[in-house]
Image (cartoon, rainbow, N blue to C red; front, side, top):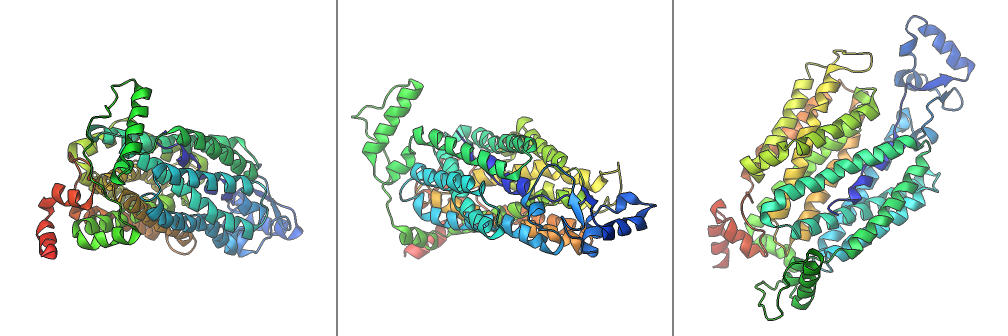
Length: 488
């Protein structure tokens, strides 16, 4: 069940809001007169420049000829109003940020499973409601609600997955989990390609999320969470249920369970970051990594319409690149051979290199619609996929069970900040040289590649239950003395 919910994120927003400035025709005399000035180069007439510089109005001066609809085209969110479309994309991540902040308290308080089900319910209802929306302001509000529920649901699934997986299998488990995201991307793109009306995409997604609730409902709560909260009776029941599912030997009622009872309130959890500097340092560095990879990923995702004409092809090829990273064993090998921390560094550095290589290749046409820089940027996808996988795994493994919900939500919330900024970076293509935008992407990827060197490494180590366990497992980082001084 590792990651069924991500198939709805963030593709539904992109697939319902795209703009294609090439597929339209004149319906007014003024537009026809303008087209007469392009008799030698008629292909250059059908462009964003023509529409925006001449203030052509949809359904008044021209009409879209593409069969597929989007609310950007339907509501006239073009030219100077493109930023409204970006608002709809970015407000989703405002909601996601808010939801994840709520998650920092709920996941470690009421449990991984219960919080996840709450998120799925919110996402299902809001997606079904979007099917009936024909107003920009209403959709803006719904986008915030989508974000709140969507990322609470995704985070719950991730936490359940890692806490049921033994140490030796976590690398493989993380790859399989993130592969479900890629598979979901292909599925939702395929479904959306067959749907001409953007409203129907939200209807399908609402139904998918509703069925996801069934899978999560039958899934047991994490026994790690139950034990850290002192709920030994519930944990034993979970172990018994798991034994029944997999036909393994049950744990005897007389067997003593070794665990640490940790049940501090929200403020107590926050104070632990001050008391344990190693946890604070790791969390801050990982938050920066989450923010940067999200900014680059969503920036590139919403860039395909700017740097190349083959939008659906670009997304599909980028997704294939992610599959190659995982399916070929590339990511598994990097994490297994070089370690968790070094995998983050290597993949960030690889993505930065790709963007820098694309700069001198800008403007070199390979075909009528494909340029060399466009093709090179596709090679960033495997590295970005590698970053997502390695950063997520490192975050989960460095977070104590007592704080895992809080820390993972903090990292993911930081990613929403990057995801909020990313779509706005694509607006730079309209104002500055695209090579500068590529350089910005490269710089954003290069910075965390350097910063990650200073993080702790969870390679070959068990998941800590408490901050004290984290200190004991990573005492070589030099924070042990600082902790002892603080205790004195």
